[in-house]
Image 1 (cartoon, rainbow, N blue to C red):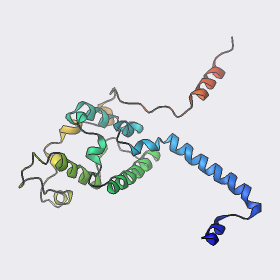
Image 2 (tube, rainbow, N blue to C red):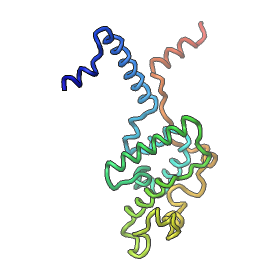
Image 3 (spheres, rainbow, N blue to C red):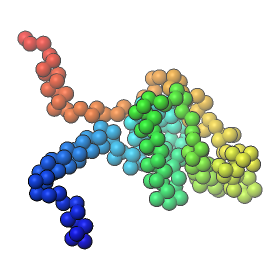
Image 4 (tube, one colour):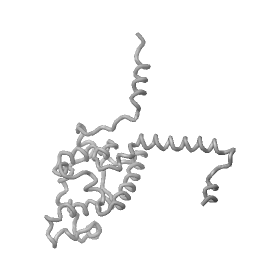
Length: 199
């Protein structure tokens, strides 16, 4: 164990520069976590999905729909069968979303991916199992739907969670949570003071 520890400890002449470099890396990591509001994605708050403005139509239509009173985004769009799968799915989906939004590759109308469709199908059945007859949709999976052996729940109930139209242009004036500024209040105040005309 001591030999392994010694392997990671730099020689005395390198300790100070290595400590400074580690401090810079930790600081940059903290700034990136703060700017991206990364910790909000660990929560179940639908406002976290609004960190990206392209989700405004989905947020607005969910908020005014029947599911807005009983379910959050994660209740429908993230697997709920075990906590490991839940957070693995959130991490994978979050990385894909972050890549798309960083590179500005997001489409005008968001389309659900295969893994997301499977999760939604599982969650439709999880919440509505008392309403499903044993010979109808209780055994219906995403794989079955893709194989042409049935349909997803939302083939018939498509407009329930998000309405008929939910592109960016469909809800231009929707009242949705706006991400807070990443600039500290003291810096904004300082910039305002320094940019105001001298009297």
